Amino acid sequence: MKGPATAYRATNPFTEQTIKAFDEHSDAYVEQALARAAALYRLDWCRGDRSPRLAM
Image (cartoon, rainbow, N blue to C red; front, side, top):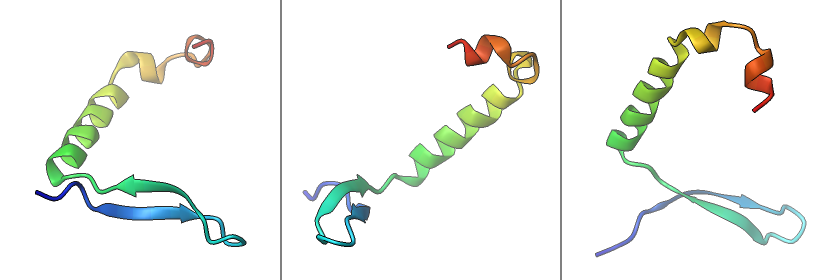
């Protein structure tokens, strides 16, 4: 069984050395992340004063 495919790599253009490789995400993972982000965006906490959020 193969591991996750590498979606893209960050490469140093001078040395051509790979800095970091990023794995591909499944459609289900992306949908879950988008749904969670949308739910968090709708919270009152997100629309209120920024000061408490910046303190974190």
